[in-house]
Amino acid sequence: MKGMRRFLQALLISTLLLSASLLLDWGRCDPPAESGPVSMWSTFHGDARRNGWAAGPAPARGDILWSFDAGASVQSSPVLGGGLLYIGADNGRLYALRPSTGEEVWNRSFGEFSTVQSTPAYWSGMVFVGSLNFSDSGLFALNASDGSVVWSVPDDRGIIASPAVVDGVVYSFSENGTAIAVNATTGQILWTAAIGGEMWASPAVANGCVFGGTITGGAFALWAQNGSVRWNFSFPETWTIYSTPCAAGDRVYIGAASYSELAGELRAVNSSTGEVIWRHLSSQGVYSSAAADGGSVYSFVWNKTADGSFLVALPAIDPNGDGVISPGEVLWSFKTEDFEGGSSPLVTDNLVVVGSSDGNVYAVDRQTGKLAWNATIGGKIVGSPALFERRVFAGSMDGAVCGLGSASELPALRISTMLEKESLPSGTVMRINVRVTDEAGNPAEGAFVKFTVSAGNLSQGGASTFPDGSQTVKYLAPPVKGNISVTLAVSASKGGFAAVSASMRFNVTVYRSSYSGVSSQSGFNMVKYAPYLALIAVLGLCNAAVLVLLVRKRWLPGQRRMRAGGG
Ligand SMILES: [Ca+2]
Image 1 (spheres, rainbow, N blue to C red):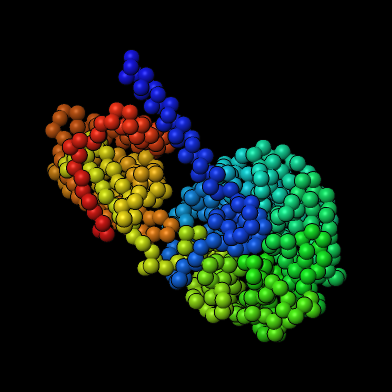
Image 2: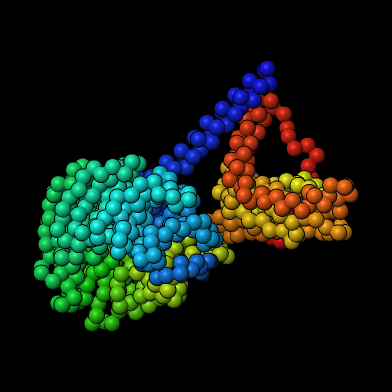
């Protein structure tokens, strides 16, 4: 009785631990409310303020570490949350990829004739995104782990804008000229506001307000609480606002352009009143969103007279106070062969990174504007690059989504593998445990582990490692006519680390029993049971941990331990 009670206690505690760990994981991904750089690139241009400022250094090199083919042009920007990268494509699909390898985890289609130009937003285990479709456009909330729809709000015109999520509320703009606020958990509409002008720009949310702009040149601030107008102003006739306002401190930076007048402007306004603080003029247009790090403002400006787009750094404070940041007051400028100026810059500790329609991602020194590296992806890049764990991510109009960084500089992972047996009879099962650590032996949680065998079948309990760096597979030995040697290969990867692989051999022997034929041809497919095995593995692990604490007794006696690293 006492043993049973202890077991039930352990089960209860382990279940609570599991729930707590999931909650902790979700909570970590919420957008920060305070000013300063963002720690998680979970929405377009970093966080709901859209200031493009990421905490941490960009990689010193822009090697293409992986490339994923979305199968259609990509205008959406990559975002990260819950351990995955999310990006939309013009085939109407939203993709969830592993940021360490680019491997697809799931994709969701919003219909054959739809596009997902909207950049998704991750919040609390959900992904929010807008779709543009001939028949059934809308704002969707998806389960971040499998892409299933949690709720949706239909839209009669379609959504290009990228939703912003703050304090459990999703803010979205439609092509039909309305702004809406929706309860992120339930999908209940909290308010709608008729702005009266198509909106391609995304909402920026800061200081209790929602900032936006229309393609007819109207700029506005709504009260986030009820959608009423706080202030608005219009650029002259023929002007458009395609870019998302960037909120920084008590300011908002708004870009605008006029095709017919070959003119553009980045305007710094007071976020409480909309009053102009300064203007920076260009000869063609400002189509991308500005980034701000407090002292400087970075803008990608199309300058037709110079045949390209310039990434410029402007002083936040106008040096001579005349209300115009003149060419002479520009801190630095970097020329690209871009003729669209669509990509919005990412500011990191060391570099400013921007995509270009000339097919490159450029990273320039934040202080000097000198080129640090460029990565030639090939297609036009109109989305905004993202930074996560020393990697830059970008999508392009030729459908490539890439992870960029410096593989050589990354610290290494180590794999240690434990086999239950050195040899096993055909048709029988053995457990294989791996533990992934960093070079110092600290467990690498969330590392993506992949097993392959030269013969037989594997069923993996889960794709990534547990908090103690471990992961388990079951190996089913194949039918054999004579004893064979099997090669097991294990690879592990995790963002911020160089991937590692290891291999080892063991034997499968002839099963000398009258039942061997039956068991070896049963075709038992353990992959089908992977989700159950994953759950059992997690609960089992928690149980084991708790039981070890309770009973204070060591486990795994007599197991053979093998160590491997780098092949
Ligand atoms: Ca000036």
